[in-house]
Length: 147
Image (tube, rainbow, N blue to C red; front, side, top):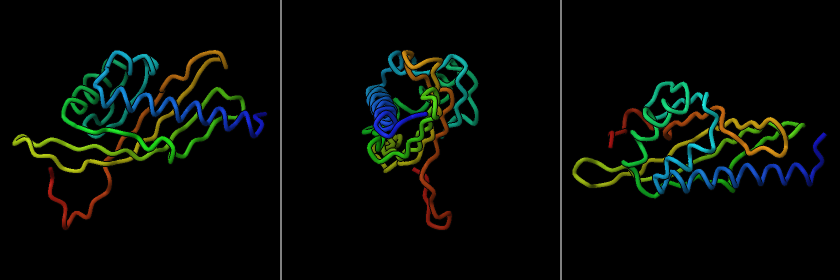
């Protein structure tokens, strides 16, 4: 059973994991970000419908998006975080913000939500992302103009 203080510590670990990944996204640090994920991760994204495996996630989602945005940041402090009683699985639901870049060099707000499922084999192991699901903020289809 996870006690309150221990649960808060585990939740802080996950928030720190998310903040670190956000810095890697903003810095386009594909190598460092890759170390945070299991090789058989499954990701749903804003570009990739489904990416099975880390190589596919990097190629189909990360490399398609990260070089084309600015100012990426997760709201890690405001994220909803759940940790399993054994401390070996966690889920993060967080908002994120960025600016998209148009072909003419102008930018537009590009925010959204993400859910990340993390797992580790034992308490001494690092957290590894097993699943990510990114979506853009919902828009009113009657007023939305794609950036």
